[in-house]
Image 1 (cartoon, rainbow, N blue to C red):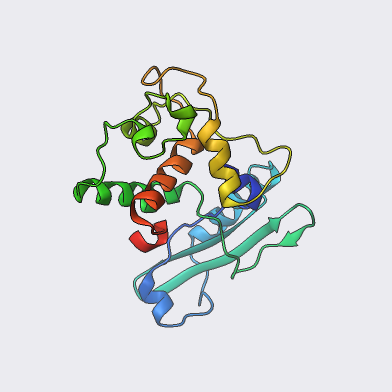
Image 2: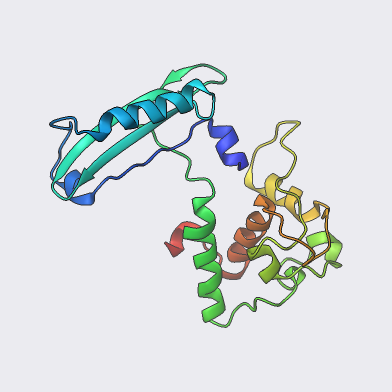
Length: 204
């Protein structure tokens, strides 16, 4: 689970939502379809077992919205907030695929980055400038870096987060084993910023 999800305290359950249905301005499902009961049950069970605090579900097919419902809570700390249909969710690790990876590969296509280069070629301050971890190893989660930076004591701010990522010590050697790490993509995002002077949002 990513730090973004932990901070948000919400999980998005997206069953199916068509652009056509939205464009037609269908505010409410006109009828409940057979799967509604199952959707209600599955989401209800997940909430009851504390797997998620809440969810928003849409189900439909072109031109017809069949199911639309909000369940549970969108936040539980510091105060409980009921889930609403207009709740904005943290995309969390989808950002890794949709934004960061796309931006890195675009820089690669432009010849501004090489995947087998050490991270220090683009972030000289990484690991004191002495790390052999490559850009490719960040992308494939073979860097050996931990799953996440420490969240306690509480901190905030982009610069603080990048500063922590730059000095975080690996728990395995580069290429030694797969270890899913948010730190990898914090560093990749910073490489994008350094090379292009642009935010990830500019690439998608």
